Amino acid sequence: MHCAGSQAKTHFDPLFPEASTVDLKEVSLVDPDQHWYYQSKLSVLRRALRRWPVSHLRLVDVGAGSGFLARGLARPGADEYVVCVDPNYSEDSRIEDNGRWRYVRSADPESVRNATVLLFIDVLEHVPDDTDLLAGYVSQAAPGTLVLITVPAFMSLWSSHDVFLEHYRRYRLPELKLVAERSGLTVLHQRYLFATIFPAVWVIRRLRRSRVAASDLDSIPRPINFALKVLLGLEHRLPWNRLFGVSAFLVARVPDQVVPTR
Image (cartoon, rainbow, N blue to C red; front, side, top):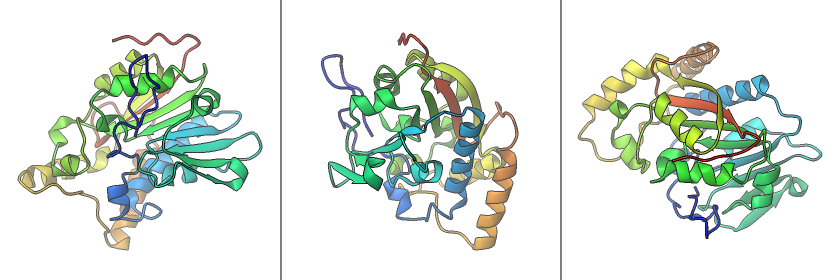
């Protein structure tokens, strides 16, 4: 996770090392290659890249954690690359596949400037100033860069799960759109995700109000895991959902002229 600094500093200082995209705290609890939550979120991102395709996939995954989402989205070829950014990595830079895959603690401006896709998947909720973080990357990106963002939705779902993951907030769609527009982005699409499980999540989190900080994600029996993947896969094929959900999803582009506002 990175937080944008002042104009006198680089926008890529890793000031918030507790945060990551596929939170490392949760990856130790479940297998993202099988778990319904991560597989459903990956399918949403894949569908977005099919709807808004890029000619060459140069992907920068901000707060990448384990890199699961980047691995699920990208098979970089010639003139393509993936940069996973997370200050929790033990090495300053790990390079794989002849330089096409890089794992770095902080993003270099050239990689961001040449990127065609920026991922901010469950990242903005981890920093005090979400607009500052997003604007720092947007200001470095080229016009036309696609930006995919997910965040946890609705403060009514706030629970020990958010405390465990060190979140600052949860969002409604208008709030997320405002952050994106203030960062200089042009919003293309927005919707809620995981609406079908929203009632159950709301009830469970009301009942667990006093529980100590802990993640809600856990391994579950295979039939239930499979059923949830199928159910959410069908839900996420719907063209829109502006009503409610456990997560909020936004697709945006960097315009020809970025003008961040506050």
